[in-house]
Amino acid sequence: MLGRFKGIRGSRTLNIRTTLLLSYFTIILICIALVGSVAFSIAYNSMQKQVEDSNVQFVRQIEVNLDNDFHNKRNVLLAPYYSEAMIDGINDYASMKEQSRFLFRQELGNLFLKSFNITPIRDFVRFQIYYSDGELLSSSDNYKPWTAAQARASDWFRGTVELDGKVFFSGIPAKQAGAEEAAYATSLLIRDFANPDQFIIVRAEYSNDLLRNISPKSAATRMIILDSQDRQVYDTAGADKPLATRLMSRLGSASGQFWHAGAAGDDLVSYVKSRYSGWKIVLMTPQAEIFAPLEKIKTSALMTVAVAFVLAFLISVLFGRSITKPILDMYKTVNRIKRGDFSVRVPVGRNDEIGRIAMNFNAMQDELQHLFESKYLYQIRLQEMQLAMLYSQINPHFLYNTLDSIKAMADYYKVQDIGAMAQSLADMFRYNTKNRDDVVTLQEELVQIEAYMNIQQIRFDDKLSYVTEIEEELYSFPLLKMTLQPLVENAVFHGIERKRGKGLIHIAAYRDQEQMVLAVSDDGVGISETRLAELLARLRPSSLSDPVAETAGGGGIGISNVYSRYAIRYGERFAMTVDSRKGRGTCITLRLSESEG
Image (cartoon, rainbow, N blue to C red; front, side, top):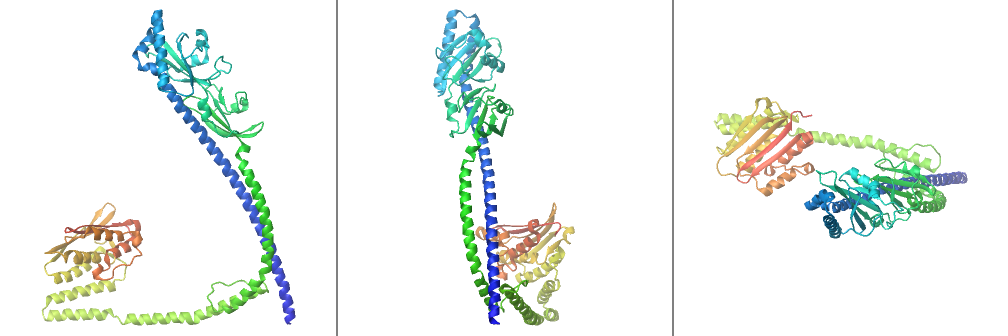
């Protein structure tokens, strides 16, 4: 029989090992493949998004740099406007004699030579000044590419005239003789605003030093600068590689980004058009350049997955062989801890060791439930009866009758103060014990305060007095029970008692828009700044879990207790403020919403 059991146990143990081996290996295989695919997809999309955003930021930064540089170059061209003699010379040039013309041309050239020297521009090549009829008035060198007629017929001359005071930015024609070192030019029309016919055009040419400096550092990324007429001003790939017509047709908007299929593969094209110059900055990044790091990650990931598969298989084999021993150990352990505390029952669906563990676990849980119902509940009921017996020993009627007897004896012996104090104390106890509601009216709280103040006035003789100022409609306003007494008690013990001479406590209730304002103030000794700061620190939501005072010396139920109860009940619809100055008195104000909610 024992041998038969061992044989069955061994075969079932082998079945568990095989199941665990296949399940564990399959789960790991699926998880690694899933995680690898998701991780690669996320990395691919993230890298693409990052490069797209980076390229957009890069072309916009180039736009800003170009616009700033062009603006500075414009300021240099405005030099004649700072000299009234120059503007007069422009107006009178056509009627000047030859000697005057010579002197004016010389002064005009010197003015711009000084301007370009005072504000040095490293990529500056030359400047030329033309009159309205195309005549070359002055030049910084001997370069004279056009006759007067050719100058007037050129695109840059006509474009500058059309802009009438705005800078015209243009590229340099590739075959322009003697202009090998110049990449682009700026030209500006300068005239007297009252004389549109006589003017000069100042043209300054610049090399591509600035454009090279702002180009991307990556050799694979191509940057192209197009002027307002879509002519290539600068290209990091060289002037002999013009953009494809299909690509140029997609650069029509103010800015954009798209993928373009080129001869060598797909390129990410990002471009922006400058609002200042009308030029376009185009950035082309090959897809292979973008995802080159990702290919290395992909190769590493595949190698990692292959190693993980091998490790997963080995771990699965070891796990399957070792799983049966922990199961047998757990089976023996569960039998030893049947008297522990378990809250769930397991389904019994098999007859192997796991099934035996489940059956023993359920049996243990049944026993625990039986013990709970027969012993634990009995102990709870016993403690409840003992607690009820303890409460029954404190009979409030005995206290009422005793206080009534004291009052009767006081009346009999004509000791009115004792009778009044006993009556007030009895009223207070009745209010605290008979009224079991958490919420009472302001009227009920005031009656309680009346009894309390009667006792204190007898105690302090004529030192203490109080007044109330309540709007008639607020007597029925709901308050939490024991709201006023802690505040009045605080005023008596910490304000009036320590004061020399008489003291006054003032209780006021009035409306302020949609809130009821309840204020308890006194003209006592007040609170020092340090003590007030400590008190205000406790009147915050984080102090709701702090212990509260339980004695009169600590403030009775205390201001903190009143704050905590209202903060829990009303939340943001409640506010408490404490205003006090040393020697001036204290005022505690509660603000409550109309509806308790």
